[in-house]
Image 1 (cartoon, rainbow, N blue to C red):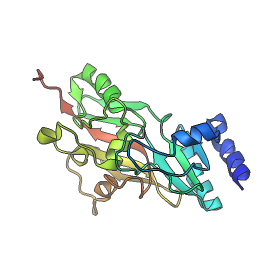
Image 2: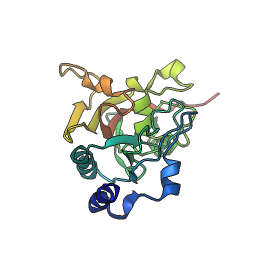
Image 3: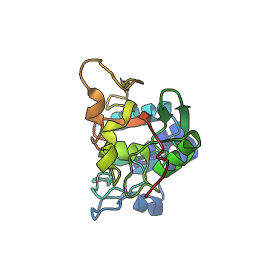
Image 4: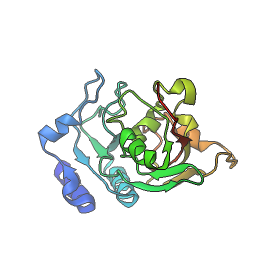
Length: 220
């Protein structure tokens, strides 16, 4: 069964599926003290279509899906607890899609690192003010999934204040779009806020629209 699943995954992502035990060992733990199992495979999708296919394949073969950003979490939420898990690494989904200087938002894939994002935004005099301690390595998707904040949270608040919209692949393999590209958004139930801090349990985040703030004139 393991070989069959691995070959099926290769049909989706090609060489971006890993079954080498040394690679699997790297993905069996994060920065926490939690220890996990070696997963069945690690896959690195590059777009939402591949994520949809991976989730549907996991359903077909009755496998668990564990989503990983940079594995900097101290909560153990990126640790596979079964050898029947498919780890979905978002490392290759690391593109900045759009920066709006007028409306102060940015669209990104979830694998973009926080510091790299802010380095790019600084060119526009803007920032995403969410500031986890691991910002040099932490990914946007990971920060959103953990409801991160950081030192700047005393002024700017947590990640939940700075996410406008999300695209996610849910457990059925369907693509869900929640939120909107405006600060004030009235569309019924606030599904967006359910995803923030959900630690990957509600779906695989594949794109985020983030609210931005102006860069301070100086830092103390």
